[in-house]
Length: 225
Image (tube, rainbow, N blue to C red):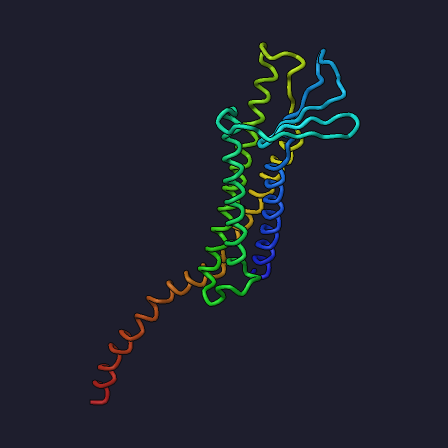
């Protein structure tokens, strides 16, 4: 059971680590939404992309020109919220990486207290799950806004946007991060819990032994008399 628990922890840690790297890439990519060519939209030689931090224009010749968002307060509310959630996801994932390393069974940190070590691993798993939830919320909220603008009647046909590749990266990263965090949370030491239960059950029996000996001693004394 101990080897299996260490294997589950190691698998969960690498899954969560890969998911955190995916969340970091998702936040940095500018392809959160891209220009749509659906309907009667005119296909041009320039493709427009927009992300949380910049907007880019890719030409058919391969040249890409990007421009950072000039003002923070002038951005839409969903972009500002997605920014905050992605930053929180990255920070929570970074803390989860540090905490999980200290709580994993394959490391030598805190070997003298296995129960506390397992609790640290569970705390790291919870941090990874929160990180994945932040990424999932940011990507889903942004995608819902893109969908609403796409089907809004007042949006011009040639000004519509569709889902960019960064959204799919974010969904995959959030799923992998939460899966890895769940594996870390499920690595609670069952053997230690059983040992504690057996120890508690054995305490009353050991406490009754002196009473039996004390009650038997006068009887032996009477026999001797």
